[in-house]
Length: 124
Image 1 (cartoon, rainbow, N blue to C red):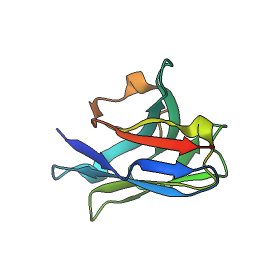
Image 2 (image 1 turned 90 degrees about the horizontal axis):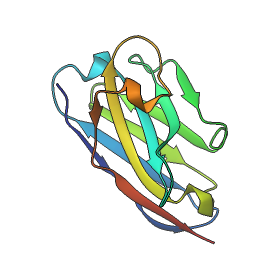
Image 3 (image 1 turned 135 degrees about the vertical axis):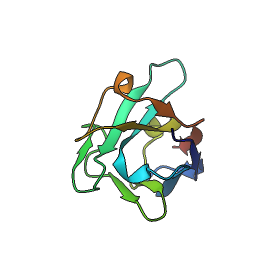
Image 4 (image 1 turned 90 degrees about the vertical axis):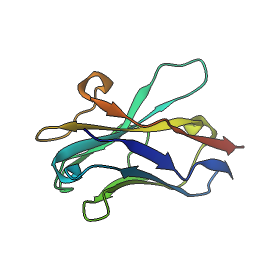
């Protein structure tokens, strides 16, 4: 089992950058595929980015491709999301998620563990 705690959210202006982190507990972080999702007010939760357990394979939603970068440090048991060129439409609560398995997963139903979320607000 793994527990996830996100951090790094905040209020920024359009065009700014922000880095999110997701700290995991447990000794088996390195076997988990990880993902970032977000949920804007009044909208369903949506996929942002995913990374496999090795950190070598990543996938992105089209809306963030080229602006966001997902990465992980298995030694530190931490998942990251570097967000550049932020837009007001990126405003949401961002969640990290984990599941055991090979590859990457873009469906939220594929994940077993979730953090509590961190809020990102991008002003225009």
